[in-house]
Every structure is written in structure tokens, then in C-alpha cells.
Amino acid sequence: MADDKDVLRDVWFGRIPTCFTLNQDEVTEREAEPYYLLLPRVSYLTLVTDKVKKHFLKVMKAEDVEEMWFEYEGTPLKWHYPIGVLFDLHASNTVLPWSITVHFKNFPDRDLLHCPSNSVIEAHFMSSIKEADALKHKSQVVNDMQKKDHKQLWMGLQNDKFDQFWAMNRKLMEYPTEEGGFRYIPFRIYQVTHTNKTLKTPVGEPQGSVRDQET
Image (cartoon, rainbow, N blue to C red; front, side, top):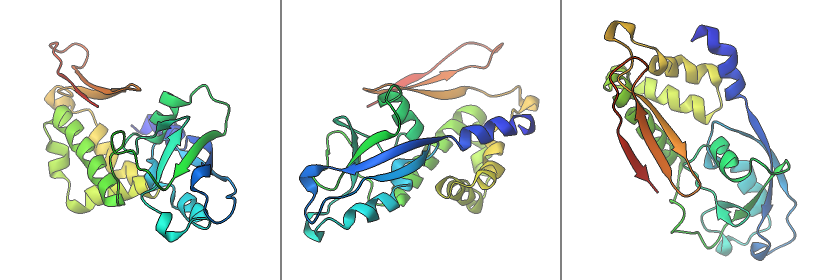
């Protein structure tokens, strides 16, 4: 992994210039100025939009504020998809900055999961990590980690700290040659309507795959 560190850094520090605007139907005090951010591709919207929320709450009445959610050209943006995935799915051909509409009312329950706190994002993230490790290493890497190691992995992502994150994540990416390599190489194929999760055996090993689908 040391030889790949420059590539890993380039991926980690990938940013998407984004313009957030408040849905005009929800302006209750005065006109809200747009808010601009450079969004990290590897993070989640609800982890990096506290400044957006504070900016637009200035023009909202408290009684009109519900759970914040985001939309791009009429499509609610799923917070549990990484930001880079959302952009590539919905806006890869758009002119930058990416224009996202902010909502504080009329949460689309049929389209989005609720996200009342960062602990929900953490649970989702760690569940994905554990799922991948179960397929690659029979859960041995995650099980060998202490609770503080799990927390360091999460805090590295939450706080956008490359070295903090990769100090733990490299253990999940190491190729166990003494055990014949990875059991499977798990990856997700995201589509606009659903997500396919497919397992592939490493090259040269007996073929076999498992496939399921989540909406």
C-alpha cells in the first residue's frame, strides 16, 4: 500500500465544488444567499453540511424547520451514498458548481432514510466495513481491532483526516498471502434506481459469486 499512497491521497482529497440554494417555497424571513462548499467525494452529505444548515436557518422560522434533506433536479439525494457516488450518478455531466437544493420540510419518506444524527451514519459506515471484511477475511481483521480502532477509522472519515483513517483502513486492505489471498473481492455497483452488490473471486481462484440487491 505504501507505493499507492499518492494515489490514495489524490482520491481522498478529491473535491466537488457545490452551490447550495434553499428551496424558494421554504423561505420565511428573507431571501437566502447561496452557500458554496468544496465537498469531499469520499464523505457523506450529512457529515459535511453543518455550515450549510447554519447558513439557511438564519432565514427560517423555528416552527418551519424539520429534518434537512437535499435534492438535485427533483431527485432526493440519498445520504447513505458517498458524495462522489451521488455526483457521478446524477450530475457527472453538469456544469460546475454542482447545484443542490436544500429542504427543511416535506421529508420524502418513500425515497430517503431518516438520519437524525451522525451516529446513524457511523452505524451504516461500520456495517459496510464489517460486511466487506466478512467477505474478504472472514471478519478476522475487524474482530481483531479494538473498539478504539473502530472509532479511529470512523473519526478519520468524519474529520477528513487521511492519515488517521488509513492507519486503520490499511489493515482491511492488506492482501493475506499466507492464507491464499482474499476470499472474495466485494464491491458495489451503484445505479440510479438501485444498488447491486456483487462478490468476485480473485483472479486464479475457483469461480463463484453471490449477488443481492437493495433499493
